[in-house]
Image 1 (cartoon, rainbow, N blue to C red):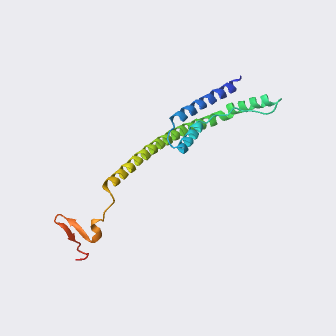
Image 2 (cartoon, one colour):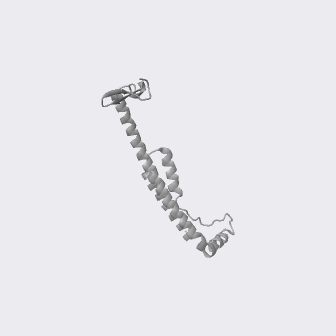
Image 3 (cartoon, rainbow, N blue to C red):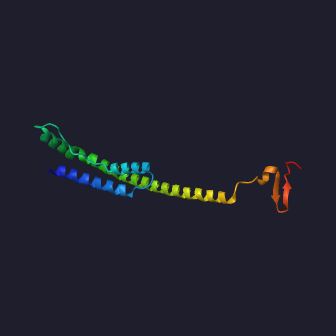
Length: 150
């Protein structure tokens, strides 16, 4: 196994471990879980090693591409890849936090809805509103409205 193949294998293993960890930590809505799993899958950019489908010249082409990438392009591409990977990691963590907060708010909302329904059942049907007949309640009992019927 060459060094580039070993590096590629190690990076694939790391990506697989990250995906497995992400799958264990993601809960809640299946659509959200699938979206977050996909974010975790692609959060780290992986530099692919050069390949060639040519049988005879293939190893020479791969060596030339690797040399060009390391000597002439690595200084330019590597910082960009690192910066993008860091941004992806931060964005994925922020989105995971938002998804967890959203799930908590949904549970709280459902609990409040059930509590409201329980209170509605306990109070019975709503009666007429006191202001519906044109009077107001005050400390001395119902009083006529100044602009309403007298």
